[in-house]
Length: 279
Image (cartoon, rainbow, N blue to C red; front, side, top):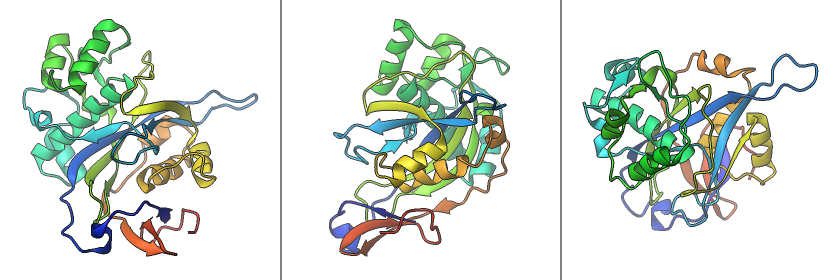
């Protein structure tokens, strides 16, 4: 896989020590699309947001909700239901404290960037609607870090539903990038009753679309994406329904693309992957 990339300075040429990647989490929200006439199913749609052009990392690129781990995501006071942090540690190939932080960050960032909350009043319930001024005030407080995720859940009597997440992949930003992330990707089905909304901030556009259409847009240049996003869309395009994707068997192993000079330009290359258009 080869993707064009802006010059990254001296580090792209290996003249400086690589920046240590920061742990992060990304969630691919799934829903079933509208079935065309005569079809039994509408297939999968994914939720994408376009990063504002003022963002320091991947400006203008389409991505899934997500972001870096906050130190408070490791708080043992976070109300929890579903597989334990220890169970997640085994799945993610991470120490238990990091696994706890990654799952919390996944749920928190999804709420911050889409308004979707993977939590409920009990282990068998999910919040039905997160629209309204009171929810928006809490979302804003989470973003500016004046409210911790643990306190947010306590205030509303909610538990994090870790069982609504499925680990999908593990991507690390190439060495040589000035901003690097060590990111676990998860998938989750949009809870019944909840709706995504244009929450602004880091994104200037949001859209639901079929993964195959997203890949087509990436190939023709209308939907810029980094390799983790385009690869994930290609993978999900092979599933007929959200439940099938959630039931898929996945091996979670780190994927580390490289920055290479190709044809006089710096490009992101995923060794062994030929799914991208040639340079």
